[in-house]
Image 1 (tube, rainbow, N blue to C red):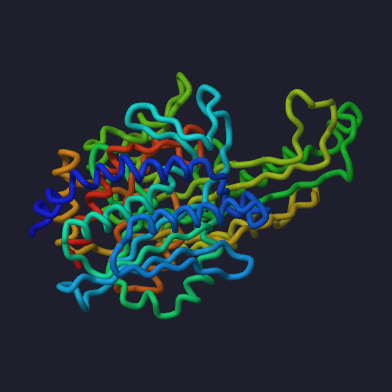
Image 2 (cartoon, helix red, strand yellow):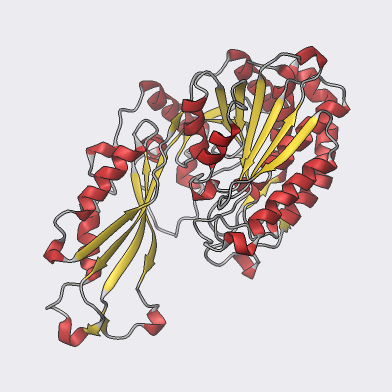
Amino acid sequence: MNSLEILDSISNSIEGDFRSIGLRYLEDYIKLRAISSAYDKDWEKNGEIERAMSLASEFIDSLSLKGMTKSIRRIEGLSPLLIIDIDATSSFSGEKTVLIYGHIDKQPATAPWQDGSDPFEPRYDGDRLYGRGVVDDGYSIVAAGIAIANLQRSGVEHPPIKVLIEASEESGSIDLPAHIEALGDELDDVELVICLDSGGFDNERLWRTTSLRGNITMTVDVSVLEHGVHSGSAGGVVPSSFRILRRLIERVEDSSTGAMVLPELYCAIPSEVVDAARSNAVEANDPLGRLFPLVEGLKLPGDASERLLDQSWRPSMAFVGIDNVPSVANAGNVLRSRTTAKLSFRIPPMVDGQVACDAIVKTLSQDPPYGARVTVTPDDPASGWFERPLPSKLIDVLDQVSQATFGKPSGACGEGGTIPFLAMLNELIPRASILATGVLTPASNAHGPNEWISIEAAISLTKAIATILASSPF
């Protein structure tokens, strides 16, 4: 059978399974507060990561997949890893393995959610299912499992498949290197990787991600006093710790434009990337100019194509957290002793994360204004990823499936987020093709309030995964 015949034979049953057992799993998953270890220091004691991993394992068991072996790998002090192996059917015996990747850990549920809704209670609104972690990316185990189950139920042949579900991605995949090392040669025969932790500009077509930025996070602590002092006494005499922090940040970011100052944070943008940005700006109707919940009157800089390049191939900095600052309601007239900020830097796909991190730390630490005590504590940096050319047969399958399920050909775009696993795989399995895809869009609000998934898009993606597996497009 060709790819469209395969899709036709499994399309209805995949939709039925997703709307029944798939949504039931996602409802249970949303209820789990499986916050990643970087944000929940007591994650082992709280047990929610373990419950989420068990839920995913039980879901796979419920599908009764043929030729399956499954294990939850454990290393003391680290989050668990779920590995599922599915034997090839007879006509695919000896074929290389397809690896499907996802994660079950979640970001914290920051900021109020709409209408006072609970981030950990599933809520439906038309085609949307709301809940923390649902699109980033709790649905991945559902899509992978239902795709495989429907191939087997319909008697469609498939290659050997390995599903890898980790539990530290939202912490920068800090536990994954140790697990990968412990796997030994288990990934040596992987020919194609399908990463389900990404997406594109919208849910109107099947998107593949062509690049991802790296990420560097760090805390910067500025201290000027041993304790707070009356602002009438010290104001104008003792420099404000917040003012010093502002001056330090000016060393790495131009406050008038938002451009990064350090040359170590830049790389040349390939000409084909610039051409693709211009095309996508028109085809997707300026997606980054219209999909964010901007306050009335806010004007974004640049034009549509420049915004796409800014988001995916230029460095940026976000001020993501602050400590030692009282709330407005509790703010007394005190010149505070210290200010502690958390900064998140996104770096272009071809920039070395460690080199960039070292340059930032050095710039922020050296010669502090007024001799203030400045401590810069970086987390482990994550480099970005740039897609290697995919087999033309795979691109054809993506186009056919996208046209059949969405009514439009597939799309390709760079993304501004980070998936550390892909950079690891680029080094570990340099010959493997990597397809980064998913149903995440700028409007999906992953990491923010009101995170949601398009049920229709997730079903279509599941159909695409099944079709890819059966087509063996290596």
